[in-house]
Length: 367
Image 1 (cartoon, one colour):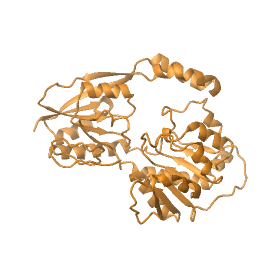
Image 2 (cartoon, one colour):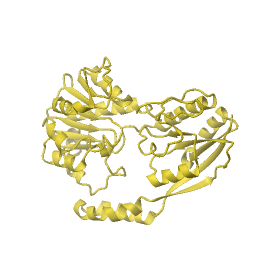
Image 3 (tube, one colour):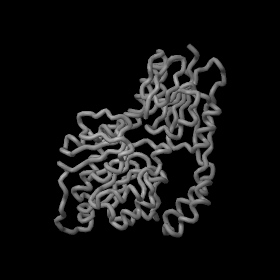
Image 4 (cartoon, helix red, strand yellow):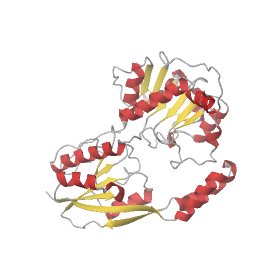
């Protein structure tokens, strides 16, 4: 077997991880890199303006500031050895701009890429000659629990109760019963399946869309993706758990929101671009739907203080927290280490996200 070379972003090249790598592949070489902001002063200026200017005043500046504020640089702190005798492995970190991801793979052509994140839409176009695995499934249970918590928060008016407590105000508020309500899940992958399972345990009627018609026991009705309008019309709580693809970008727009019940709640725990944000803002502002819980927006940076969405009383913003826990990074790394062991032993890899197989390793998978 060729000598292994593993490239890690500096934050992952900690002693604990390097020790695990050495235990699995004692001869492996380690290359490390950093991703930094190219224009940190412009980024700081943008951050300041996002805090102090009203949204209407800041919006025209976005197209001028964002292209520069988002530029990154790639630098190698421990450069890779360039040799045809090396079998390159890359732990692909989150938050890379498309151009930097392209540069990274050009400077370090890997045989196998493991994505720290579940979503691989930014990596797929770059991984043409490599096997690609993701962290799919690692976060499923915690995201499902978080989603169920959001459903209860909306049904039981937890946000309003919290505000009343902070304002030292006493008032009884009505709540809605979860048992018997209809839960509509858009995308029944690993995360959607866990959400469906939990929803069923609390007595909800579960509908879901998926590519194939196979119906798990914990789902009452399976619909094809083309039947999304029916799911939107019938559901009391709609959860978006689809990967971001050309077909799912702006999957939920003004037309789709108009199909929802006025009493319905929308929950997005996947990618912000799945929703047309202008349409969502309009639907919430004019109470066309009861409310929404949004974990991530189109702008995946921290939502600025001047955002119009903070003005909506029927919107719960959770700040990209659905997946996050004290041990989430450790669990991602454990999956990587298990796949590294499999890679070294020429075994099938877990969570393969492309149909490409290198030297017999891996098997095609579907997100």
